[in-house]
Image (cartoon, rainbow, N blue to C red; front, side):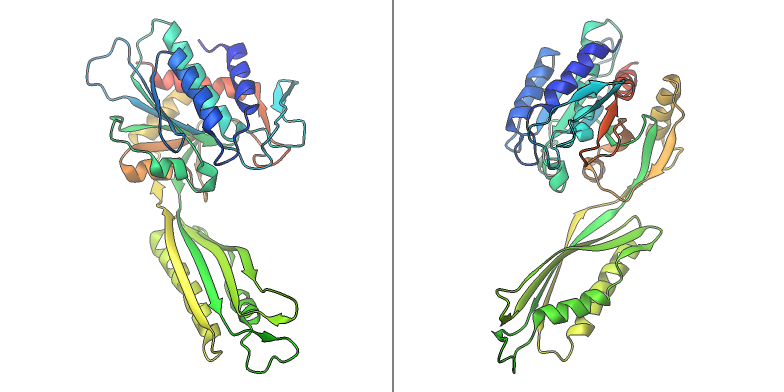
Length: 362
């Protein structure tokens, strides 16, 4: 049985450990020690991923483990979090994020492991991956060696809203890095110069951004260029992305973006570098998928009506599915993530832990 007091205390302890993306050694060590105390075999890798194995109870040898995943890093502002528990909710003091994304998922896994360890119910073996640097581009998951994992399916606790959501689809993301090279000159004598900033502005203006269709979006998030107000800029760098739940649409939109820049630069004398890197690949499940149905049955057992969602965001689940572990993302209960207004209802945190525990029972 889930111990609400212990669960809340675990969560409060976790969020008070500074864990911005890339600075996660301390929290990884804390999570590792907590899992060891719950009977798990634990190791940490060089990325500060925590890998843990919990033996099953009362099950046949060779039964496939349940895979569980959440991540430890927080987005800024994430240092000096001061959680406040009031009115059945947990929030920060308003100067930082709360860190429930995704330490609520971590706490739910820790509590479920503790509950399973202290009762005599039969349960599946657990294979747990608590990853680092998810917010920076799924870095921990990409670098995690799965050679010791035997699980074929499981859940990723990393979505907002009341417990009950099952994410059926996630997009593929292309990272785009564009460099326009012109020719510098003093602004008082611009003859013969090639203004890379002016050309970049024209190219951006003709590029379709935002919602492209029901499955696709595009964005430019960073533009860098120029050295001084009195120098015609000779180089501009643009960083952006294209993402889609449909691979053919993704390639079409990425190609259209490149062709638009090529047309804009034609005849200007400027040079174009257009680099595309695949960040992660899509996945999609149907409502009749066996794992989806399994999670849905447990949610109903816990008194929740399953909600089926499609997302335009990526998560560690994109990496697990590409690496051969079928993984669906489930909601953990947090709201208004990535803002100082983030909060977590205690009842949702408890329900998330109950979901993990019940999925493990046989």
